[in-house]
Image 1 (spheres, rainbow, N blue to C red):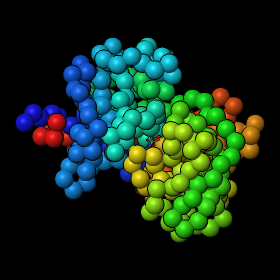
Image 2: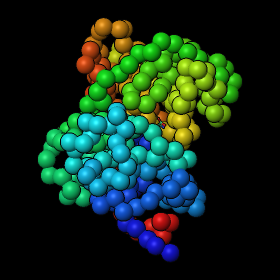
Image 3: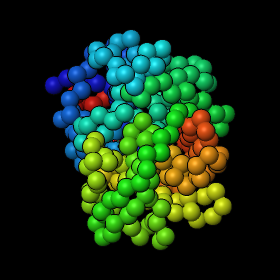
Image 4: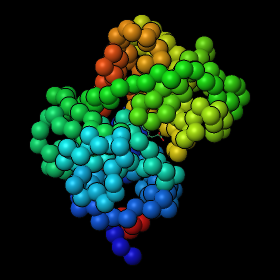
Length: 274
Ligand SMILES: N[C@@H](CCC[C@H](N)C(=O)O)C(=O)O
């Protein structure tokens, strides 16, 4: 059996198995991702971040990722079910922190390649990581059937698809145990579903059911989608968004959104699951 170095990290408890593969030698299958993310038989995680030099990528970058060509490092993100997603907001923040932690980058400001293009990151003096998420597209409205209720909200693209739904009850009471049923015409590739409520001036509470990972304790792109949905179109706003795993801050304006919050590495070791 082969083995490989790994690290484990999280951003507001959205947790990832990090696989350093600078030369792009690893053939990462869906099955391997599922094994690594398994919380009982594996390392456990909401997803995998493969750390690969952009110029070592074997795959052709999708058109949306073209601006990633100028970056040194590419975040190859996978959901815990093995599926590929365009973007992961907490993942980028943890990825940036890992690059610094591993000595692969020495600057405080740099760009990370993703399938949604290059994302500018800043390592703040207090250790938090801010990512410029780029454009946030508002695409109208839709609804989702949850385990016990139907919720209505805003279709938002943050590179990946979201349905951000304001609810008028505490989000802690919403049943997110079942896969949300979506309008497949509105969301042909599926979507992440957020429920949020405004609990004070500039403060949201949010929970999320992630495409490909189920309910997670935080989702960076979901936090941005909820903040954008809560911001009247054409206005600027800064939101603190509380999730089960902690709190992030989002600034939304005409140019897009910036997401800030903690990023932590909790373990490093060698896995035999590769
Ligand atoms: N947890 C991530 C989002 C990961 C991708 C998502 N599940 C999808 O399939 O679009 C985040 O922090 O943004």
